[in-house]
Image (tube, rainbow, N blue to C red):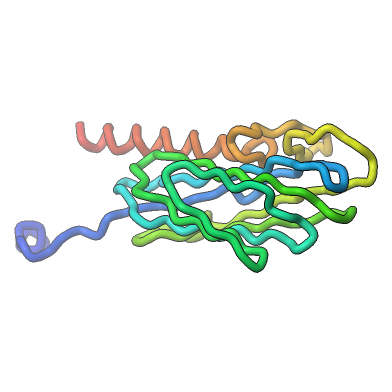
Length: 187
């Protein structure tokens, strides 16, 4: 039966994609009315090209979105939600979404994000969140920081979207491993 299915011209295998974002998107600090850059990475860890990757970023009302640059995609915003649609993403490809934010009041504000795409076989890695801490004192905006298991602060990889020791870097590692595994299977 299996050989008949493999040779059937009417059956097409479902493409395997895996849209992923870091679970911990870092912590950023800023003063009231000072602009801070917030970044996150989106990756396709699957074996196939994926189309129409949707990313929703939920920004609290205490933060104003001052800028929204994105490459290879289109974003819109309204009512505290940034909705991005990214164009075709190849296997092992990582895209970055940047927001310029400005806080109007002091506090710790959580930004959450969710990603989705067609034929995503692992939806367990599609959600993440991070914090923007707005303080009264004038500070220089910082790279995202987190604490390790020992409680020692670590500066995260800001170009990869923050998140501490793993941050967005794990997306690059997993994407590389996925590409290696595909080459190994093809050989």
